[in-house]
Length: 216
Image (tube, rainbow, N blue to C red):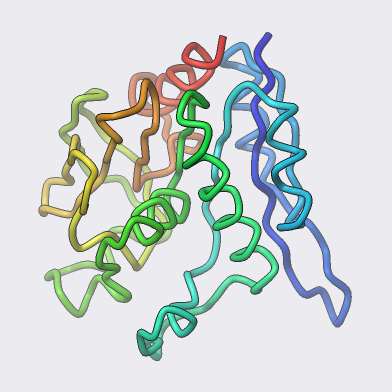
């Protein structure tokens, strides 16, 4: 069974830092035939962690802090802790040097992939898309993509405004970029929805299974 490294979140729990990961990610990897391994938010150690896995799942979470990139932060932004952001970008830099490693980015994970490569980040969807709030609170909407077509569950208020060097391989029914891939790698895919919480078999577990199979 391939080992899938799943990036953890980091939260401030009344002054104490706590690593956190929704069990839905773990169960989706298990159902797909992989062995989950949780990766804590330690940027300096992330490379050593990645050397121990066969594939990587970059999970969802709070927003990217754009201020270190010289971009003003939207008033609606709720940023992840800097330790997590540093660890995730450390992951992406390592993956730049290890293009053979299969990777799936989910929601924030896809946004991190894009921002790492210079893509524009829409910091609040309702500012640019009518009824952008329909992508929040696990609401179901349709996606058409190379990975499949069907209903998906979403929980985000940010999205990629362009795909930069990536190929766009999926859109929602209102035009939001929902899936990207790096054409220069065997499996380097981002999806904006949450397959680990999507009931539809093809658009749910089927997406995670693609990562596991690529990691064998």
